[in-house]
Length: 313
Image 1 (tube, one colour):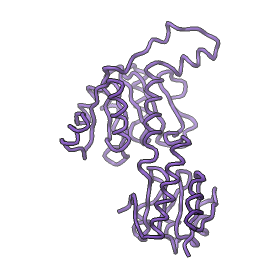
Image 2 (cartoon, rainbow, N blue to C red):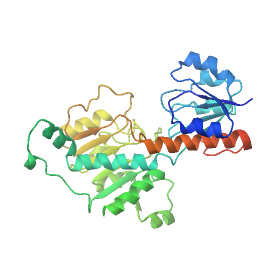
Image 3 (spheres, rainbow, N blue to C red):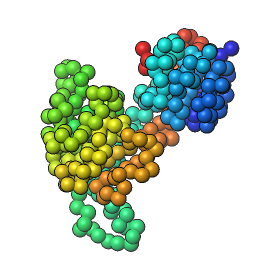
């Protein structure tokens, strides 16, 4: 008998889809690793977000598990090697949070370029410091997009509306596609040199880890902004802070951190840094979309053996 364990906080859309298709499920949130090891034996499917880490130990004790669903993009919290070894399909929903993440990226860019964060703080202190908050416009600026997947493409689309020049770095983008999207595909080094805004929308790997560091920062314009709404570890946070303090960088905006939850950031108190607590996909609309999508994908897998958006091929 097929039964799904919902082990993380997800939208009610998941249960609505399962009820509609007569799929049995239990919701058990906040389980420890050992509790999951014990519970998982009874389930065919598992749904988690980012709060639960699906370890090798859990997977190896999953006697009946066939599918793991992640409503969202990142599956860093799932041991894909262990899942593949046991023939367990791991699925995500790569399109559900594209709009939300792109909008947050531009929200952070706006805040840094127009000094919204510190102007807001000043007003809450009952001050009127109009002359202090002279900012910059996005029109005519060059934005460098590192990673040109679904979110990178949405960033490109929005950037064009602002009248920005767009350059990208993507190892998979063909010349034909670059022409179609009206972007220039550059090396990382060249992108860093020409961009006024550098924004990350790529995966974290051995190759991309600390892509921004003390050496690559030397290539960046002194007044440039770096935005990371992708993955912690793409930038060396210590090197970013030093560059900000030495006025070698205009500003830094981030929604992700190398160590999360980040409750004692080295950037705390810096006016030219805007931080959010990994809320890129945290909109009502995005959570409903990804929950609905992952539930529908699991239904298709269980009822029709159809695999959609598998990440551990």
